[in-house]
Structure formats: C-alpha cells, structure tokens
Amino acid sequence: MVIRRWLIRHPSFLVKIVHTRGVCTEDRLWEKARLWSVVPEWPCVGAPLRGHGLMRDAETTLDMQRGYVGYVGRGGDFRARTEPADAIGVFLQWDPAVFGKPSDPRMSRTPIAKRDLARVERTVGRIVSGTPGLEVDVAELFAIFGSLGVLNDRHFGDLVVPPSPRVARVGAAIDGVLSRAGARPMVVDLMRALNCSERQARYLVNEYVGAYALQGATEWRTLVNVWTTYLAGLLMTAKGATTEGVAALLGYGSPNALCHALTNAGLPTPGEMRKIVKELA
Image 1 (tube, rainbow, N blue to C red):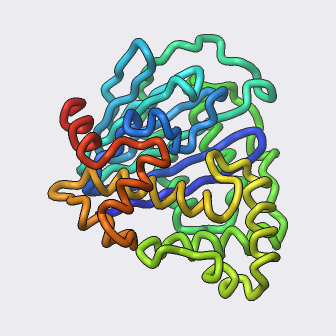
Image 2: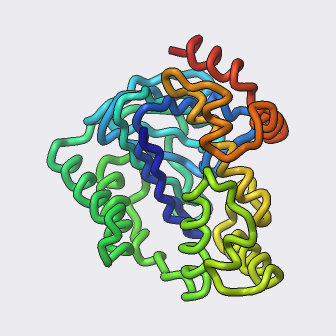
C-alpha cells in the first residue's frame, strides 16, 4: 500500500503530486470535512500519469487516464476518484486574480501529446526526488499545461521564492513527525525534532501554517488531526480494511476512538465510507 503526497505552495498558485496504491481516493467521502488540498476559488487542472480515475463537477463526469488533462474552472466544484491500482497524478491551481480568469469555466478534457506527457513525467520525477531547481520545474509544468490552452501561459516560475530557512526547517520537522502517524504524533515529538520548548514549537507551527495557509489546520493539534483522519479515510477504502486494523495502524486506542475522531472531523463512519465507495464504483 502506498499513500504519498507532495505539495508546492505559493500565495498565487499550487502544485500537488499524489501517488497511491491499494486505496481508493474518492473526494465525495470528504464533502463535509473538505480535507483535500484544493483551493476552492482557483481553477484546477489535473493529469493522470498512471492509473485510471474520474473527474467530476456538479454536472459532468469525465473518464480520466494517461494521455489526458482534465480542467475545472473552480476548485470548489472539483471532485476526483482514483481506483486502488497504482495511480500517480499531478494537479495545478492558480489565483485568477493574479493570472486572469479562465475564458471558459466549464469542465473539459484535453488530450496531451506523448512528447508533452514525457516532459511532465520527467519534471514530476525531478520534483519528487528532490532534485535542485524546483522553480525551474514548476515553471516547466505551467508552461506545458499553458501550451495546451487550459491555463494562461504566464511566467509562474518567476514567482517561486524559497521559504525562509526557519520555515523550511519547521516544515521538514513536521513532515518527519507526521510520517510516523502510527505513533500518534505529539507536540513533544516535534519539540525533540526542533530541539526547542513547547511554547516555541507551537509558535513555529503557527508561523508555518500561516505561511502556507494550510486548509483545515490552525495549530499543531488540528494539523495532526487533519492528516490522521485523512489517512484513516483513505485506509478504510483498502480491500479487507477493518475499523480495528486501521485504528491500530494509526495509533488510536480503540475502534470507537477512531469512529469518534472521524465523526468529529465531519467524515462518514467506516461503514458509511465502505458503502459510499461501493455505490460509486
């Protein structure tokens, strides 16, 4: 099973890369919680690099697979689904107040040439491997999709600025601690990673969250809860998943504790999740 996500945040645009295997990603599971990282008022384009899925808005459903780019004029209308098979996708969003509103807000699907798809794959490969030159790679992605006419071809790469060393250090520490989800991450774990007091750790988290305007998270506790419940929702869609197994994997004290956490986050119960996924298959 694989659940990996890379986010490149900027005040005026967003790049998201997702790699999953063995779970079903179904945005309709998160209708009330709104846990997935899409900026509601920004346009969104997405391209599957591996696997098969669907892209929806309120009126249209598009079959998405390798070789196509999907577009929706408003992120808040965006819904997606990928099947349990190995799936990799890249998603781009941008602020229309900065780069201009799209000429056509309707959802659409555009074929992408093999050479352009190969460019996207090479660029995504460099990003996920941490190769230096992130600003160049971001500019490359927007240039490729801009050439397809699904967004305004502007110099997005010129806006990429490195975060401050402190924000970068805090981000790396948070990523490391949250990656140990089964250990039920606590602020003391972050204190150790940052070698600082609890008060300073909480301050640094608030600074990090504010810098990237993370949706649904305002402090360490909510940051942990958002990520853990998101993982729980994904894991519950895996074949043979049980409430007991997912609760144990994520460090919850009992299945009831997991159900309580999901309810508090506005998510369906594990049984409802399985039913939703089955009905939408």
